[in-house]
Amino acid sequence: MKGRKGQDCEELIAKYRRDGRPEDYELFLRKVDSMVEPMIRSKVQDENVRADLKQEILMSVHKSLPTYDESRSFYNW
Image (cartoon, rainbow, N blue to C red; front, side):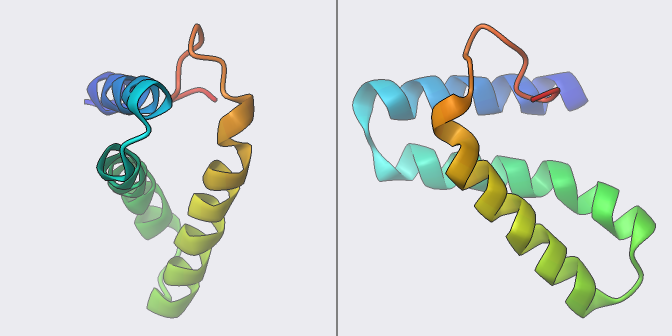
């Protein structure tokens, strides 16, 4: 499952970079959210703290996306 979500992200990043469609970027962020949610939920009990962490992670991914190398695994990035 982890690999598939990572592959989905990789495909969406490539599509977004190629076509510039905001819908692809939004779907990419939703996929990232679905990857980080279980990790955060397993470690953080407080719902407000979880929401803050997710927001920080998504902002970090957003800001760092230009440095993502498509030849490497998104999941490990």
